[in-house]
Image (tube, rainbow, N blue to C red; front, top):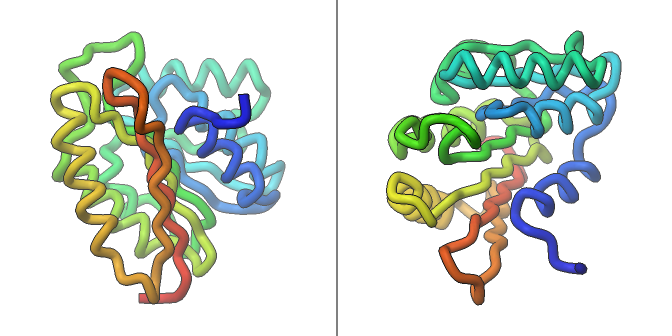
Length: 189
């Protein structure tokens, strides 16, 4: 199939962007799939900062990293993605967000609009020029609908002189499929 789902397309884009030695962030570690993906691309001298508020998510991510022999490239942080500026240095190459709830976890615990918007703002400030933020949004569940609408509204108002913003998603599928938002920083703001 030529057209990929939102998550697969984010990986395709970032596989061409993230380079060995980069400092990157997985702002929502979840089950660790994106963390492992990023750790593979930053190489031996790169660094991944992976955040999650749920201890079980960090444990699952740690297990996945150990199986892939990539744990040394990753710093797991038990904190909200809204706090990433407290832990991450400036001039990072990429920040990945996969909003919503932990697959296989408690669906009542999901990302929240206020903390997600704060995290996105912090991510843009920490990005190097040429850096990229990817965010997969899930409008098909209750909390995700409001969060997705707010994030898309926020992104739509970013100044085009400083950021390029792409929205990617299928429009003819049932159950409100995920939407990918990609933001490239064009210049310092």
